[in-house]
Length: 417
Ligand SMILES: [Zn+2]
Image 1 (cartoon, rainbow, N blue to C red):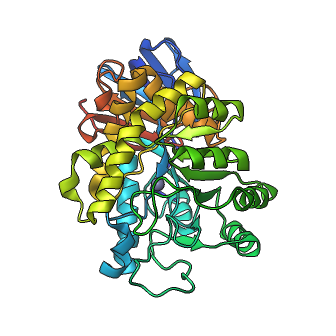
Image 2: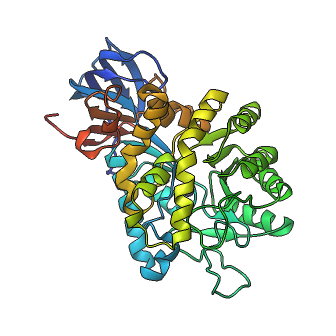
């Protein structure tokens, strides 16, 4: 650890403790953190000599938030063109700024679903830059003409060059040997999981949202190659046909899943495939079409995806699917982070919205040391002024951040709150 982060003994005193696991909130509860981990949680906790005390009256003490679907490297909404408009140095610095913003508003872990490479993970780990822990998939696998192929129809065909776009990186690969090589290359680059575009999406120029991408055979091969290397595969899939293919191929998570219906949700639950919905990005974008310079067909695709997003989440919960939480916000949309929680709470209530962004996300990410306030878990805590069970919109809202602690280090503490 660099001097940016020094682990301390910290007593968070007398706030509303929300454990992230769905337990009853503890009014006037305290949390003790030492040696980088949570030591005690409850009404009576010890106060070791020399502990730094953060008074939490009027505030709520939560596990550090987890965002299971971000693109740190999408520094513009129009990310497909950002490398033509900005130098790599600016994009890299903006990415550092985005990470810092997320830590500032209470996120202590983010899972980057394509774009951030090993350098960002390492920069945070070493304390070179401030940010949540970054779990990476590196370059996103896409078929030719798929959701990761950013070429417009007027551009020449042939090979799409890997790492063409700094900040948002894609590996366009088709067929057995190219896909094996693409997965192995990501393994070589130290990724934590593999991300695949298994259907069309909104932000790409030539593909159709309602179509599956890759054959089941190709998707299965990606899973086989990833699993042999100890990695799971997250599959971007919006339409039913693609969600089914993802389940059949052995996906660990379906990302977005906007058009999920009840029957397919049951199919996901039976196969223990988790869903990471990203409601805010679609719903908020559809409410603000003026922000987009995209061609009308892209804007129309966003509207379509927004319509499905809310009911997909409802179906998933009803079927017993494990439902995590991701924001997927691009560029300055990052200001909409609180909306992911607000929209989720509209569907399942605030308590389950909080659980999704803490312990459920941690479990999906295979990180049971995160997302809960329980002895032995990493000392990640977010303290917000107010009670998110009464007003969920305070989560991830800069004006309501009282303190953020990551790995037992106080990142920020707004005094007098
Ligand atoms: Zn995404």
